[in-house]
Length: 414
Image (cartoon, rainbow, N blue to C red):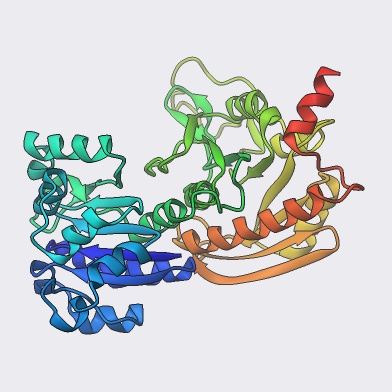
């Protein structure tokens, strides 16, 4: 796919070399068009090095414009992305102004346009900026972000440019809206830990951050799927374009999962569900009255096995987080729970939980593949691609137990 990346003059322009890399990882050819003010924040040399193409910035470039290059760019693009998009560039787009190469090209293109705003939080909340945002959205422009957090000015609020990997996922999906591997499919994903109450102020939980499950949800959405994310208590921002259901306990996750999964094509169980829970949580805070105490625990219902055991089960993917015997335990879980696939990774004080990177081994009946350490966002993209491969191959196999959702629904009504 061909993507024109327009860069305007905001401090977030320093993130654009990484954004170019993320777009190229997803198979895009990237042509950069800079405004004059963007050149104050990032160099053409750096951008040309990562994009592999000469950077365009001057509407009055006699050599390029001799062949009406801005029209060629407008026709070449499968999508136009402006990141960062300042208040000024949004105002130009909303007003139909075309004083530079970037805005001229935007008026001349029929490709979808996305903007990733980045500015001070007070500027972002200004009524004029919000009016321009609404105007652009009404015209079909995709607005990506902004996110909330600390800003270069030292203040905190909504105005940070969305992270490059998330922008890349959304824009590549925009550039090929019908080309996603999971287009038309529904994917249910569980993520994060559960909390099992001991009393009103204490609970049993684990170290899962939910990062891998959330990354899988974003990756599946980028591949065109309708994604339903069932999330335990985490501090992560909800992935865009994903339907999120929040739960606290293993029992709540079990109930919510079974209420949604029968209409899913695929189920990915990335949550770290508590294996045991207190038998009877105390109604009042337990007081420290003795030198020792004990808590009776009962086994939680197995969400993964129960879904895989359904008569019309979706394509079911489990996760195995292990401290030792990774391969042995993963293969045992794959067989005992009758899964279509299992993704196994080591966890401990130096890997797995809480980290932004991960390495995994994937197993399925008759096959396996290892993925070396990578950012969880990138790893999720690779895993979703592999899952789509396996789903397609089994769905098309007449001997397989994997039945497309539309056929399962027909079977239920017969």
